[in-house]
Length: 260
Length: 324
Image (cartoon, rainbow over all chains, first blue to last red; front, side, top):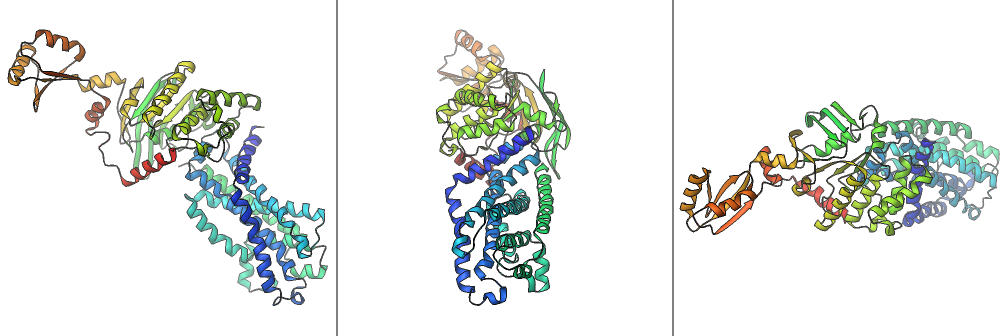
């Protein structure tokens, strides 16, 4: 099937380029560990578990994983801007390949790279006092695939508009930090001002964090606590991310189709 | 058969007309050139013909496929070697070519052999596992030509093929290109602003400000400009001038100490001068018209002396830097 083969060819290139860039892989694990250690140490006391129902570090951990996955998925689209800036994009566009295959190949590349990162971060779980059942690993991995696909759809839309890597970097920072902080990774969204609730509802990361928290903490913490912290059932989170993916990927395909 | 058929091709960006209703056709096996300064519309034309940008008006057919309606068929028929380098320098030479082969639908059992074939053609087989980042400008260009050939295109587009390369590399690249034309009857469409490179073409279209000013073989174009120039020097300048006028009825131009006349076939005429003139000639020079003369005459200015904008200069610097 020619279409599948072209998606795979594009996918493979994204993965090869990422794995060859050793300097990119190591720092990406550093950031989440830093958050967990520093924020954990600092806020563990003030945000004692009597309020949350669970130790703060354990509360943060799923959100940190989701955040990290999002960051990597977002950043992976910089390869498209690189392609545009260094001319390789023309080679792709002049090939007899469907534009949707190009978008899918790149999105799946980012998805693979980002979701794999989640697996690495699950190794920290024992250090926080969480036990991770193999089924949880699978469940989480699948959900992180969905989250990173949604995020890479969004960042491909941005990448299709940016002409240089600098401008992509600037816009990315503009999006990423609000999305991180509004997602409920650091504090529950169950008792925040209304404006924040509204904003968090358009943030795809919110749904990723919500699902990740339920998946990872589900067996370890009482159901009462979970239902206090959870926003939506996991399958609702999944549906939202699916719709978000469909919209952003369609816009990306249109953007790649626009030939000027 | 005509591999390229263009009628009234136009490209407008808002109020700016980059290409203004040009028409021409290119036969199979021809080397066809677009000669013109930066900004003339050469790259825009190639971009339209290679389906990278949309056509504002007019029609173009490549290998009998319409560039607007049958884009994938056009893409499979052409190989493109861009003006700016377009390789992935974080992949190896072989990986770059395999990527291309797969995107163009070559089956796995075929493309491994084909990749080897084209790499050997451009003498890069030994470097197949090196990252392109380590390649020199000339090597990158050769690799791009190899890549353009993988899928057996009928037509090869070369956009400023030797821009920024040293003369020796330039000569080598033209060796490959001419070999290609011979062995595979490949049609080649190229753009250039190097006059001596344009001499390789079977036919040239002189393009300026989005329009084709003239289209013919290099020889005929040069003949249109006029004849050869013979420059003579003599201690008896005035006597020589009078004799030239009387004997041959030439219009004689005086340029400092030299006299110059225009004749149709300089090489044939010189021996006659030596045999027939009485006045002694001290020095003589024969100049044949170059494409530079053609361009100057047809557009009213020299191709290199136009003001390069700062941006053009920057692009040129960056381009040469990337080729290294």
